[in-house]
View 1 (cartoon, rainbow, N blue to C red):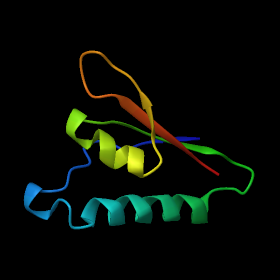
View 2 (cartoon, rainbow, N blue to C red; view 1 turned 90 degrees about the vertical axis):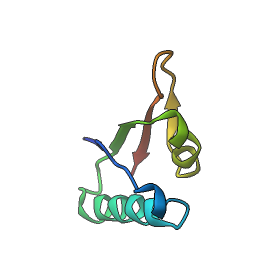
View 3 (tube, rainbow, N blue to C red; view 1 turned 30 degrees about the horizontal axis):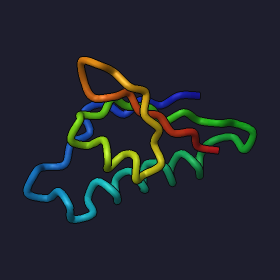
View 4 (cartoon, rainbow, N blue to C red; view 1 turned 60 degrees about the horizontal axis):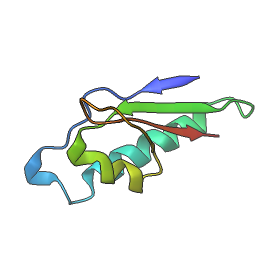
Length: 77
């Protein structure tokens, strides 16, 4: 099972206040609470270069791209 996060943005005035962290944590918790126990879920997105460190801190792994920010993914079990 794969879920793709598209156009996830926190308004600049609210960045570095925990809003993005809260949204990602709520999304991951929802997935964990609702998937079949035998499933593994790939949570995927394409990061901007500026957000790369944020997603790495959240456990996402980088899939490099030379012309744009990298693709990112995280397995949830």
